[in-house]
Each structure stands twice: as C-alpha cells, then as structure tokens.
Image (cartoon, rainbow, N blue to C red; front, side, top):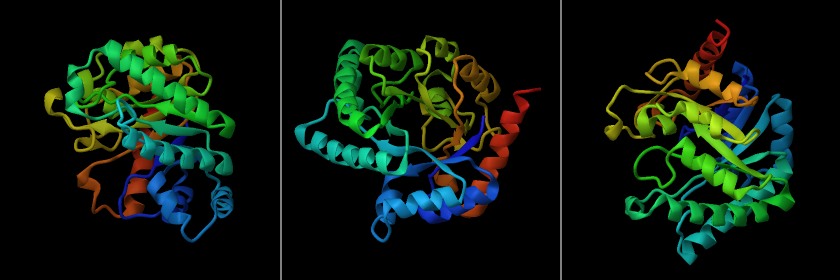
Length: 279
C-alpha cells in the first residue's frame, strides 16, 4: 500500500499540507471540504489541480458529508448543498471519492437496523444519482461508537449490497471500527462485495474500555496503540483492496502539534506498519 494523508489539523492549510505531503513522500491526500472552500476564496480549482500535480499528489477523497440519516428538510437541504459542491470539485480535480457519514444521534438507538438500513439505502441511492453525472463515488463510513446509527462492518456491507450502485462503496477506518468491539468482527471484511472498499483510514487506539472509547479522542499514530493493524491490513488486501492507507488522526492531543512533525511522523509510523506486512 502507498500512503495518503487525511487533513486533520484545524490550524493548518491546504497549501501547507500539500507541500509537506510532497516533502515526506505521501502519494495522495484526502482534502477537507472546509480547507478546500477556504482555498477557493483566493484560488481556482484549476490552480489546485496544478498544485497537486506539481507536488506529485493524487486527490483521494473529499472529507466529508456527515449526518445523512433521518434528516429534516432543512438538514437535508444543507447536506445537498455541501454534497453538490463536493461533486463539482470531484469533476474539476479528478477526485474519485466523497466520504459520507451516518448520523450521530443517541436518539437513534431506538431505531431497529431494518429502519436504519432502509433509510441509509434510500439516502445513498439519492446521493448516488446526484453524484453519477460528475463521476463521483460515495464512500460510506460506519462508526462503531454507540452514538452513530451504522456501526459495524456487517451493517455497512449489508447496506452497500442493498444500495447496489456502481458508485457507492465504503470507507473503513480502523479506529472507528475498533470503537464497536475492538475489531473482534474483523473477519466480516469478507462480507464486503469485491471492489467496494474505496478508502482505508489507518490509525491506532489507546487501550481504554470500549464503552469509553471516543473516535476523536483516543486515536494514536499507527503502531502506537492496541489495534491489530497488521491483521486488519492483511484482511483488507485479501478482500481486494489496492488503494492507499490514509492517515487520519483526529485527537485533541495533536491540536498543538507542529504540522511538519505531525505529517512526518504519520508517514514514518504508517510506513513501518506497511513494511511489516511482508515479514
């Protein structure tokens, strides 16, 4: 696997991240939508495409369109506005994927999986229809913490099968899945239809009880925690995934990190994990 960088530092910028990714050897970048919007206030998408080419970087995904389930009309209108912007940018930047995320709301604990699946299929098909003319694909990301309504590999695989669209697949984030059952269900990766793993987020986790685990508070650099990343990466490869490992490290402990140190360490620690797969 090659290595991708997922923009996570709140005080960095798209230009700085691109330059540092080039310096430390990343092959691709996941662009945060907010950073892209900020960049476009003073630049064009054509300039960004040229900047990426100059720095030998491919765009992998735009991050992200969140809380897509059980929306009010007002919420849905805001999602559509953000999603349509992302679709247009996919076409202009030759960016393949848009990460879309199920809804975070503890009130949805009362919903059955049948209800959640039906809503997810409906919403993903609608977004699929919008994305198709732009050549964009949706990478649906389950999150194992109990507040999110689609939590497991099995649930996500069932939803993707039911959607049955060529431009709808999955984002699999090691930490987000670890939050459910410490990846005891890892073998269910085999349930995912071939070619439907679009994006892989690599990270690690602090050793805390699963009921206390927070997806954006307990992440660590790959190799610094307790996630069985070697096994997970090997299963991904067995499932046919050939894309990069994208370093995603949301965590308040990194808020004051120097961007250069942060991006360099993310690359080196991920490289060590990937190189160990051959041993």
